[in-house]
Length: 366
Image 1 (spheres, rainbow, N blue to C red):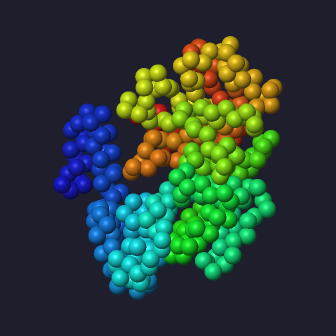
Image 2 (cartoon, rainbow, N blue to C red):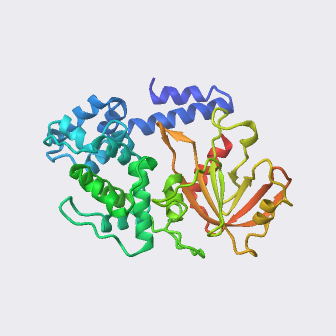
Image 3 (cartoon, rainbow, N blue to C red):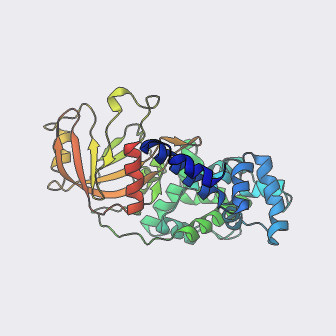
C-alpha cells in the first residue's frame, strides 16, 4: 500500500484509529529509510550460520577486515546479537577470516563475554583496560587501588560466576590469560564499549567506597561485588529485591518495573515508578509497617547516617540473560502513605536524564 493511500485512509477513521494508523505509518517510514544493509541485518541475522555468512561477505563489501566495532556498527547490531550466537573470535574462524585456536576455557569465557557486553561505565571500562594484561605474555600486577580491585572482582563473577572462586585476583587473571584469544577479545570488547560512551557522568559522594557510576548498568552480582558485599572469599545469598548492608550502612533496592505473575507472587507485585525526574514511588515489602525497625530506618535514614541506593531495570530477563539494573544513585526519604506495605516517595539526589525518564514513564504507563 502506498503511503499516500495509507494517509488518505486515516482521514476516514475515528480519532483513536487515526492515531494508531499514523503511528504504524511512522514506524514503517522510519524502518524503510534505514540503510539497506541494516534492514538486511535485521531480517537475515537470525541464526549463527547467517551471521557467519555476513562476516565472510563484510570484507568484500567494505574492503576492510572485520572488527567487532565496525561489524556491529555497519549492520546496526547490538553486541548481544553477536554473543548470543558465539564468541566473536569463533565466528571469525567460522567465516574463515582468522585461523583456528584452542583456548582451554573458550566455551566458559564466551558465555562470560556475553554477560559482560552490557557494561557502559567509563570508570569501570578504563580501569579494566589499565589493569588487565595487554596480552597473555604480560605479567599481571595486582592494583593498589581498592576501587580497581573491586572492578576486577566484578569482572571475575561476570566471567566465571560463583562456580569458581580462586584465593586471589592474580589466580583469576592468570586463568584468563591462559586463554589468550579470549583475553584479546575481552580487551577488544572493552575498547568497543568505551568508544560508544558519549555522556560524562555526574559525580556523587557517599560515606563509603562506591565505584559505581551514576546511570550506568550493572548486574546484581556486579553491584554486590562493587560495594564489597561479595568478595572472592564470601558471597551471601540475595534473593529479594531489598538488602540492608549494615557494614556500610545502606539499603539497596533492586527494582524490576515489568513484574509478571510467572516471576512474582501476588504479594510482591509492588507499584514502583518514576513520578518525575527527581521523585520515585516505591512500595516496601508487604510485611513492613511504618513503626517497624525497618520502616523507621527508611524514614530516618539521614539522621541515622544510613544511605539508600536505587537500582532499576525493565524486565527480569532479556534473551535468556538476567537484565542489568540502571543505578539511579542515592535517594532521600520524602514521605510515605500506608503500612504493610509502605508506599514511599524517594527524592533522587541526581535528576533522571530525560531519555531515561521517558523510558521509565513509558513502562509505568504500559
